[in-house]
Length: 499
Image 1: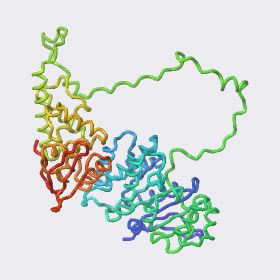
Image 2 (image 1 turned 60 degrees about the vertical axis):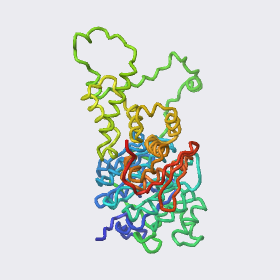
Image 3 (image 1 turned 90 degrees about the vertical axis):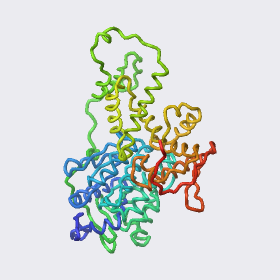
Image 4 (image 1 turned 180 degrees about the vertical axis):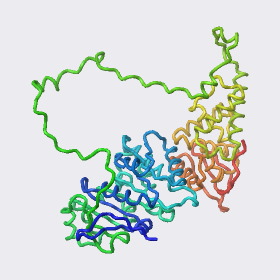
């Protein structure tokens, strides 16, 4: 079935349509200077295709959040989520076929790139069973796939550029149709732009951008001057989903509007301040007179924490409690009991794929049952304990100087990778085979073996490990500086380290 969605009308007055089925197979690039109507074009495309295909929008300025009320998109505020949480959200959105808007407004460039890369990675890495068709729209694509290094760190740029390259180069077989919009073709990475087969070129002024636009549309260089004269909302179209030859079209109206309209001119107030200099350049008030920012209220403890902190109202605890010095034997026994509880949780084959919050709640309930409710670990301490337990390192082992040193080295990694580094370190110290991709993926909380391999690649790029393959195809990992090396292990081995 061919689905033709209306984009507006041609310069000759005929209806202008876009073949949605063809777009899913060939991708789209939109270019135009600020004010040319790119965002309006994307909004028209999203509104017209919303009933037919799942969508996700990478939105750096919060322009597309208004799609939620009319078309039911889920708005995800990236500022409120970690990279791991966004990666998981991308996977779940793909699996459950929910259209989303990733709102990156309010984040600096570094965090925008990192969070967009994590979300796109989650969409890209889902299992083959969930490769449903999806339209992935990236506004201001030059931010996420820059042609040259900018103000952000190399790591963030590589993560984002890798995610964008996967989307445009390898996304088609996974059902992902990339739609990227940019103000400057010259600032967009060429390997990302080159994968698009459909083009919509709007008003452009710089010679280098006009020349690239003319080349993409198969026009002569002398015809490139026409891009300067295009009106707002007018584009030159070319591609199998649009037209086999360059075609001028005008984008039609939209049902929704961006939350912030274009600023309009308005007259200055008639009544001028009597003494503008005295008012504007007055000395700042003393510190004591300035309104103080109210300190944030501490988060209320959850119900389980309150229950565990509560004690029966017995005669003994009605009296004022007297602090006793910690008993080393009792502390050791408590650590051992906590280790047993955590080991029981991790014994569940699905535990590796559960969110940290779900595991923490399970841990709290089990502690309450065991009578360990008072003074239970907070979420941060539980996360560190979980990292250690997934590596098979007991509380007693963790006190040793050598594991303290390993933990310090692991601190340069993202939190969700530290447990994998410690798991490899344990295998290397004990001369065990290198953990296989399934074991690493499970410890990372994913079912994707490709992501497990990328974790090792990332660690190698950070200078922590060196990966080698022997003649039998088995993997050996050496820890830099510590000079520990694992025994050869098959990359596809299912078994994990014994606890």
